[in-house]
Length: 208
Ligand SMILES: C[S@@+](CC[C@H](N)C(=O)[O-])C[C@H]1O[C@@H](n2cnc3c(N)ncnc32)[C@H](O)[C@@H]1O
Image (cartoon, rainbow, N blue to C red; front, top):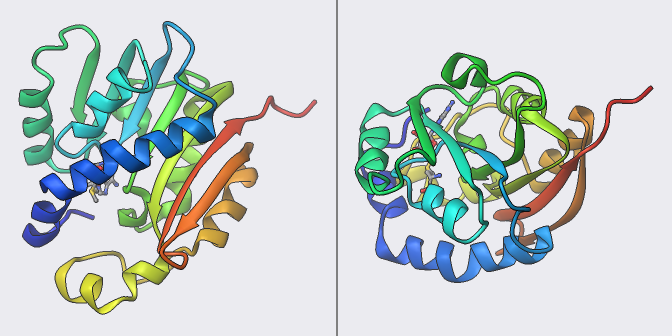
């Protein structure tokens, strides 16, 4: 589901960027135990204007990132932001629930997957989790920073932004869903009374 104009402005504001750069990324790096191993390939779902994509390259140390977003306008902004990283970023318009369509991504393609505040925008959010898990190799990491049902029920979110109305997830719902797709949560915490969930999960080898 696309962002409305007000949410776009908030998400792309200097305040949000500072929060992401100075608080969220350091916290996620701590949970992940540091940057990715050399030559890691990452996928980012819902890349928006590409600010997070740049952090995945520069702070998480990914060698390459495949990044997609449902909104062509956002992908155009990301292309402009990332024009100086030729050969390291592929950007496509596409849906987080179908990474094969966007990138031809097979099972176990990536060493890392990033979700910076996207899955709560997807009506079938479990399908987005399943697809993210599918494209991670065993041992690959899923780094997530999500907005929960608690936040979306607040008047500020209800009045100013558009989100799927049904089947929203709490932090507990999200953390319970991950192991169903072979993702073992290795660290997670909520902030502002469960409004936001930050965490890291590792893809487990297939049983048998
Ligand atoms: C809150 S914004 C976050 C953008 C970016 N990750 C950031 O942190 O700035 C949510 C983004 O998810 C995108 N989005 C929503 N549904 C999507 C879907 N099914 N597949 C891919 N992107 C989606 C929206 O277009 C929007 O850019």
